[in-house]
Amino acid sequence: MTDASDNSLQEQNVDYTAADAPGYYEPSEQLALKALTIFFTQIRHIPAFSFLHRALVMDQYRSKNFNKALLLSLIGVVSVYHDLGPGMVKRGDEFIARAESLILQDLENPSVPNVQALIFIIKHRAYRRRFTSAFSLTAIAIRSAMGLRLNYDDPKLDFLTQECCRRTMWSLYLIDNVMSAGYQEFTLSSPRLLHIQLPTHDTNFDLDIPDQGGYLEPTHYSPGAKSPSTLSLVIRMMNINYRVLEFTKQAVASDVGNSEFGSQVDVFQLELNNYQSQLPTQFQSSTRNIQLHAHSSSLSSFLSIHVHWHMAHCNIYRLTMEGLVEALPQPTLTALDQEFVRSCQIRCYESAIELAKILQAVLAVKPDGVALDLDIAVSVYQCFRILAHANYTLNIILEDMAEGIKAYCQVCMDFLESMFFECEATAAIRTRMNLCRQYRW
Image (cartoon, rainbow, N blue to C red; front, top):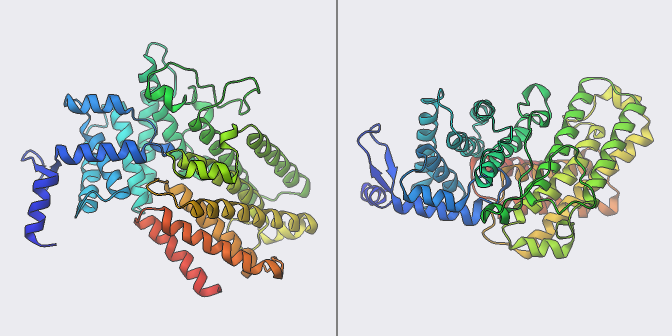
């Protein structure tokens, strides 16, 4: 880019503020409003970003009372998902760095907006493959949130303020859930520490209609209960998936016998079946529902529910997929009943096939402008790994199914290519998939 175009960009999208470090530019009002509009129309429905209320944010921004770190970090995240103009990806990185600096300089004065800004910063760091930074900032964010007692409901707060606080805490729970990957020593927001209701329906949140959201525990709501919110369905599913991963980590670290392993598998299978059977009709997995959600802001949550439901099965049965790093040690696998091992291997790749079929159905609709989060991209990659490993390494796929498995692997690659934004994390996943294809196909 030429110097002239650089100057033009600065005039259009940023204002220089001498109080800041040389070379730093404040976002212009035009840029800020554009980013806020894009966020609320295209990105906020991603479960981890569901904590901001549009009317409140716009009122605060217009009255010049909007937290600076929160605005900068929001623009930084939007710059990853959406083309804000020439050079704005780099500028978004600078906004994120500036927001982080502002928060770290003020750690002794935690606030809800700063915690919310940290959520954006953490996600941005993950997109940039700066996972160590994201990991450390997650700890700061969760400790700050609990210091502010966001893990407790406060009846003195009005509904809208309380719901924003709850959603902020649940967003951190979702991030921590993914970041800790089932390792107890890394988990900071265990459900037993969250004494808050689940989020209410988005419509009630948007229109300030007081409502009760229920609780994560017990995990099964009664048949007579009102329909749970979309976000609460995602949280329940992620909670199950975390406990599955927790079990698999413990199983790999210690010997498990036939009875112990089999009984725990049955427990999780029953819970997953119950979860699926209790999904509201509009969130059941069907071709029609996929078509309906594909052009809606609900696609991100719909996919999060079903991708992680199938991945939970894959994670359980992947323990028997000899050769994968997530599998049980070879001596343990050998000691297990081999018919049982074989049945688990079949369930593993069949679950991956069912997941690939959902991705294929979404691609057939060709949705446009729907933002998806990185954890879905990671699950798509894991689905690809399982299918490729079953077909090309273990050779447990029937010969007449081999070409079909290859086609489903391609579906995973196509989904990642067409449905996700470009960033270092998704680029790295694509590279791994391409290397696998070149090596095995």
